Image (cartoon, rainbow, N blue to C red):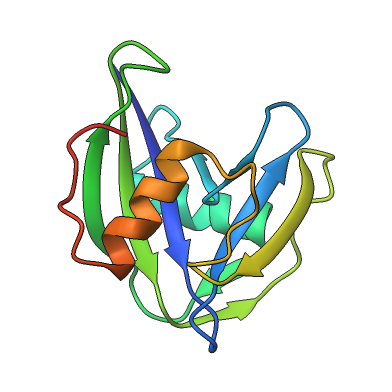
Length: 132
């Protein structure tokens, strides 16, 4: 089994932070894999700094846990929400092509379906799916 983490990071205007990687298509919530010996929260904090240039000022709140079997057999993703944060230097390793904040109702056209579902669940009465 593999475990990933993603975060719904909101700015003061209620916009959501998305990242576009250099190695895969589409816009995603920032996050990544949990390394051996690492907690999910530690992985989230590491990925937020590396990909998004974000450091939470309060503990991120777990808002969902989803099976990602359609993309990676036996993979699961924990989703957290971050409402209070400060900017920190992001990694300059070439992994992230772009990052930006977007209104939940005005996402880039190539936002991934899983990302769209998580945002819809967070901002509407949509039922939370167990699947990514």
